[in-house]
Amino acid sequence: MIRSMTGYGDAEVDAPAGRLRLEVKTVNHRFFNTNVKTPSGFDRFEKAMTDALKPFIARGHVNAYLSLDRSVVALQPGASIDLVKARAYQAALKGLKDELELPGEPTLEMLARFSDIFRVPETDRTAGIEEVDLVALVQTAAAALRAMREAEGLRLAADLDERLTAIGAHLDEVEGRAPKRLVEQRDKLRAAVQELTAQVDIDDDRLAREIAYLAEKWDINEEIVRFRSHIELFREAIEGDGSEPVGKRLGFLVQEMLREANTVGSKANDAALAQASVAIKEEIERIREQVENVE
Image (cartoon, rainbow, N blue to C red; front, top):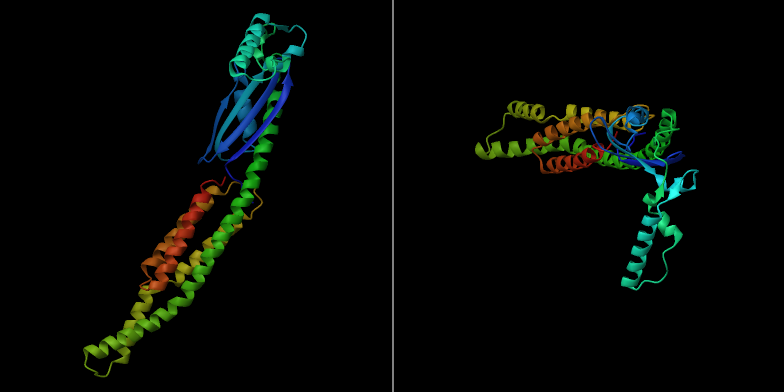
């Protein structure tokens, strides 16, 4: 099982200072790289939050945003309303209604969305919040993110398997065509010698040596064997248990497959083999693009 490096997860919890909400987003990156943003006063929790993310995310650029919604504290003891601001918002909403000729009237629900009309005794926003509480919040959001990355990974694996199957089919074509190409080349060489020597008998031993030289020069059996080995290792990686990231390993295998495809193309000397080589490299390029997003 593989995981995508693209994902999203969120979680929220009520705290004495308001409702805490955490959003975690990830995109592809060579390493584990984090950018944690927190409200004023919460920066002392950032290291613990980063550490809590690591078990869920092995690789990728992580953006974690912690926000504090203080509107919910209106129901808490000691909270009061800034009536001046509330009336200003009400007047603004009414003026907008009249100007645009909209139906309805400003309601309490509308005004409650302006969190700055609620006044709370100035205290430490982090009062009553323990590090373990934020770690639990991070774990909940990260678990949701990981589930999304795994679901996306299943789709990536299906596409990669389809590409590998297509490459395997092209390799079958190459293996079937390679011997025929030598026979055709032998016949062409024999015909060319006969034409140049004015129908003089051909030295079959000399012709056999020339064909043997070409066979050695154009031999692609080793490349095919290595290519199939790379495909097998690639499949083993994407079908693993997901206990460790495999993106870098897959990237290396893609490079090796491209190397073998280039060698096959350079040894082709045959239109059909050249076309198959190009088709293989096209599939490898599609695989490379997908692998860039595998954790």
